[in-house]
Length: 335
Figure: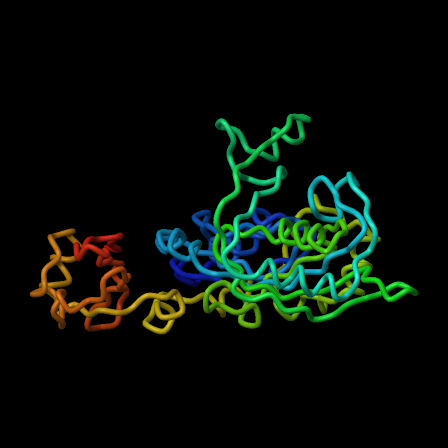
């Protein structure tokens, strides 16, 4: 497919279960004719949902978007914990099923600011090696707990056994960067005097970016307890190659976003405008930032905020930051 589009942009992609985040980038590379792509937060192979992908020169925005809060729907299976904390792993612990009351109390406890120990099977580095690589070698991995925030946790659906105990539940979460939903499943189950692991995971939002706007969204199956049970039974192939899907590539071309002011707002940035062509030249050459370059006074900028820089012709030229101490600095410049 010939590339008729600028490779500089932001692509919202609906990742299918069974694909790694890396292999899911194949269609974007093909559609835009570029190898310069970077997603802003990995999804496990068994999971589905939103990947926000920066391409071309806008890969420089990836670090900022990675910091965004994220929303998920998760299906938890109770009674068994696996070594990977999801259904493809080996069972390492069993326990009775929880009551609905115990489950609700556990969810409430794991809402707000908490400390979370990342899973052994994760990309966290321990002594220079990935924790997941060490775990596969059979080595004991101890990762210190870290602070996270669970802004919301809402019980959406349950499936019970003949005695009314909870076999599965579906919960929606909105969480801070660095939160492992697998660990929330483990900890909620433990708090409810049970054991548990993820039977399914669906990322629905990254910052203000929504899965419904993603290329490939209409190809995702409905996400529910029953669909997650079926996927776990089928043991979907987690190493299958990404299909050369021409329809998806066309949708990616149609939906790629340049960084206009509305996209900058979605990214959580404020906007600022260069005064004229001379100011644009100075800015693009990396000259020191001063109020004379812009249509506003830099002293009036909000501390701790990022500002997307636009020309009079509405061309995105880069990002500046006013640090909490008042210093204003370039984050990057697009020439």
